[in-house]
Amino acid sequence: MHQVTLVPGDGIGPEVTRAAREVVLAPGAKIEFEEVLAGQRAERDLGTPLPAAVFDSIARTKLALKGPTQTPFGGDYRIHIERKDARGKLEKRTYPSITIALRKELGLFVNVRPIKNYPGVSSRFDKVDLLIFRENSEDLYMGMERMIDEGTAEAIKIISLRASERVTRFALDYMRKLGRRKLTIGHKANVMKMTDGLFLKTAQDTAKQYREIEVNQRVVDALCMELVMKPEEFDSLLLPNLYGDIVSDLAAGLVGGLGLAPGANIGPDCAMFEAVHGTAPDIAGKDIANPMAMILSAVMLLRHVGEAGAADRIEAALAAVLREKRHVTPDLGGDAGTRRMSEAIVEKLARP
Ligand code: NAI
Image (cartoon, rainbow, N blue to C red; front, top):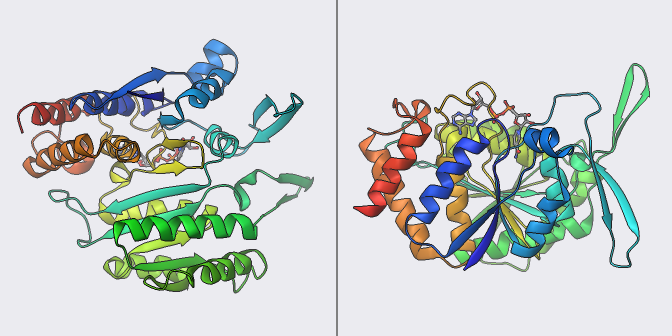
């Protein structure tokens, strides 16, 4: 039995994680969920948005399925972490958001985001099948920002050879396993000569050991333009943290929106699965959020733990519901709710 920490999160998080939980348990996968709170409810009920219980649970389970958590725009909101190191010394760290705190503290150095067309889902493009690898531990996301004076703010961008090499190697090994053959490195090394320059050179040098994979590069702005004109020409993308975040949402838009984009954060000790989308406050609590991205994130979890049979059955059931179009959420052109859509998938699992 695989124990999995479940974090419902904020906004649409509880709705879509409930759907994912029900769908995952339906085909009899050997999964047991342990629910812990993080986010606004944790802050209200437990006095902190990211309680130690979350880390304690993931330390045990090594696996998490996480709903989105809200972060205010701007201001001085920070997540404060106090943890003892191996020698018992108390360490204090701060992060810009709950998700970044979890990724950093748990050593989840890569964010894998498969984004593709699904039969039955209308979108501006067909033949899109992208696999995005986003470096997850550094870049401008380290939260090293300060006001120099009232009218000037500063942020520090960190790129290291070690992290760039680690994420490139992971991406190429992952591609090898899936038989994918073309990797495009996104960067802005013409302007960010040292930081993105180091990322690009390290990725290119590392890729020389993977001769069967064709590796090319694009300046990230040109990459965005090409992606919205001819996305079918791209296969896998490797990007530093910030560009990876932006390009993921762009890619989701190519195939029908954020409701379709799952993700996995992976590290040497544990893995945390979460959709690309956020808390969607505009639709939260209305039972209209598309649960697909969270369900597909759970499918990635199942594959990660070797439950490929259950993963295949869920994907087939989801595909059938999408093809029939009767029980899909409004973003997919239907009028079903989150609950009804997940029930329809569970029904298909029971009677394929
Ligand atoms: P968002 O991804 O929450 O929403 C963007 C748009 O996509 C909205 O119109 C929303 O309704 C739609 N959308 C998102 N997920 C959907 C779904 N499953 N079904 C149908 N429509 C969906 O991005 P936004 O509004 O920029 O961020 C809201 C909050 O989420 C912020 O506090 C942000 O910090 C947080 N966030 C958290 C993430 C995480 O915990 N991993 C990731 C991204 C954002």
